[in-house]
Image (cartoon, rainbow, N blue to C red):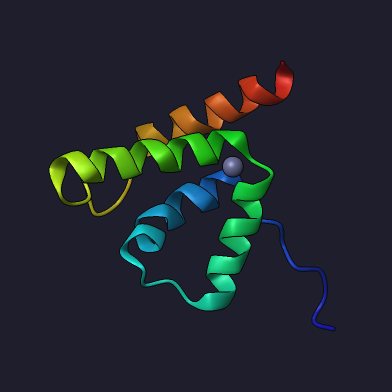
Length: 83
Ligand SMILES: [Zn+2]
């Protein structure tokens, strides 16, 4: 084995979302991303929100997520875990 496989963090997952939505993700990476979503309500909700935005605009709102969005999500996630 090549050592422990690092679990995907929310910050990583958010950064992968645009790639995921554009369908350009490698299968292994996509599997890790989906495994993270399976146990992370915050990222699942955020992905739904991005899908809704894309449906409205017809495209991604930005190429890369601004840091403020990532910080918001991490905050959301931490509050979710605390509850
Ligand atoms: Zn997450």
